[in-house]
Amino acid sequence: MPEIGEVARIVHYLKKHVVGKTIASVKTQEDDIVYGKVGNSASAFQKAMSGKKIVDAKQQGKYFWLEMESPPHPLMHFGMSGWMKFSNDDTAYYRPTKPEESEWPPRFWKFVLQMKEEPDTEVAFVDARRLGRVRLIDAKAEDMRKTSPLKENGPDPVIDPEILTVEWLTRKLRSKKVPVKALLLDQANISGIGNWVGDEILYQARLHPEQYSNTFSDDQVKQLHNAMVYVCKTAVDTLADSEMFPEDWLMRHRWGKGKKDGGKLPNGAKITFLKVGGRTSAVVPSLQKKTGAVAGDVSDSVANGVEELDEEVKPQKGAKRKSKVVTDDEKTQEEERQEKTPANTKRGRKKVDNDIVKDEVHEEKPSKKQKTSAKGIKKMEENNNKSGEVGGKRRSGRLSKG
Image (cartoon, rainbow, N blue to C red; front, side):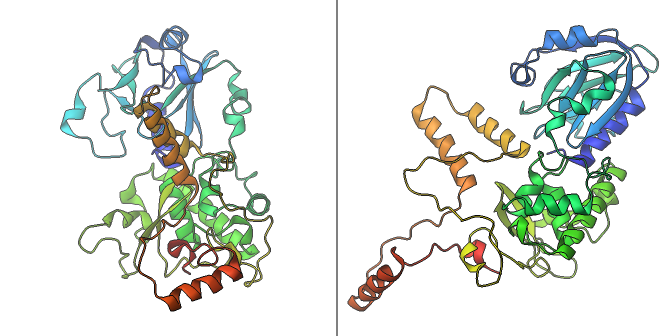
């Protein structure tokens, strides 16, 4: 998914090719998801953009927009796989372009803007999976960040250093009790951090993604802040070109999973993968140690002297799920599942719900029944009397390892 660095890349190319120019013509394709889900339409977009001059291109986290000579201004979000392509420049994409992708207009285009001035330039918004969003914001240019949905998003680590201070981050972490990776991915907390950036930040800070946000020391919070600013600024400065990332970055080596000599750092340290906040996380266990309570072993926190902000509530069979804050990444994943599932199929609807539950609650599957000796049965009964349930407290081997 395009994150803070990738979005900075597209803003760079928009400034290079279209800022200061006038839109001669607009071609659109109606899409009731990309436009419709945010109260827009292709026809409204076409009417609003035609003949307008583009004054600037700006960004906040994963959102970016074109500042027009007059409102409304188009605000865009790439979702999981959206991008913008340029007819006169195939270097804008952060991944190598395939030969079949050189056609114009490109496949899966949602709109194409043709510039009036020379050289001939067209820019297209493309999205194969239809998880991106194109809005029209009727506000003054200087008020864009004070308007929804930008005002509901947290500060940007690169453009808001005066807000996102160590003190601010300390208060944010200690006001919640969630795995730190999940907190970083929630755009309502901080703008622009997605899966790979979140993993890189935690790796550079030497913090474990599963550890609860309210359990870090002052020094660890400072490490996290320094790593956040460093990683996000580097990603933006390099325009998300991974070949320009420092050699010691996790990003340079995390994609070797399943390959020969893959899943390791150059020094031999093993990279493991686990799910946190509904996303697969890359972790180096030998460097990212758990120093406080983590998801799945809260009961051990008391023994470790860690203060708990609130009582851990275990899910009960048949109980209604409580709502939770969902990140932009998780929203797009859920929307994709819903689009693939027939709305009038009860079995399909149940499957989507089950998938969401699996993301929210990690429970150990019951093991197959095994023959038990009389001595074993007696031992189980003794455990039941002590704990009130077979086997005592719920275990999660993946989450409870140090």
